[in-house]
Image 1 (cartoon, rainbow, N blue to C red):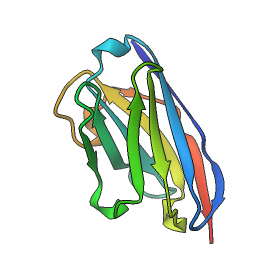
Image 2 (image 1 turned 180 degrees about the horizontal axis):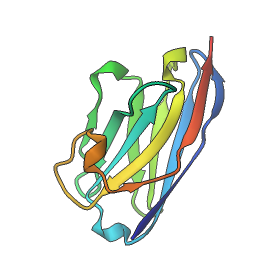
Image 3 (image 1 turned 60 degrees about the horizontal axis):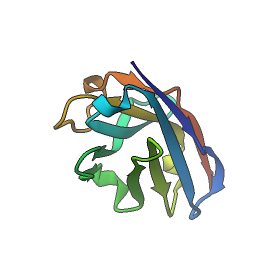
Image 4 (image 1 turned 90 degrees about the vertical axis):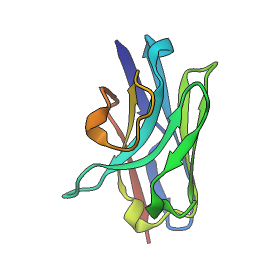
Length: 124
């Protein structure tokens, strides 16, 4: 089993920055893909970014326009999402997700392990 705990959410003004963290515990050595998703009220959950744990290869949603950066600290079993130049449209609950399979994209249904989420609110 794998447990994921997100932190770092909060309120920020448009144009500002925020860094989210996701601490993984349990059988973390089995994980191959870890990703960030978000879900705004009334909208479907959407993929934000994904990283392969062994190679560090990253993949981002086109809509982010290079504003977010996903990274990992394997020694700390922690995933990060650096959010820059945030916009009100970035307001959502942000979730960390992981799976033992390699080759994962940003399809939420493909991921087996999920955190509880951390809220990000961007004001204009």
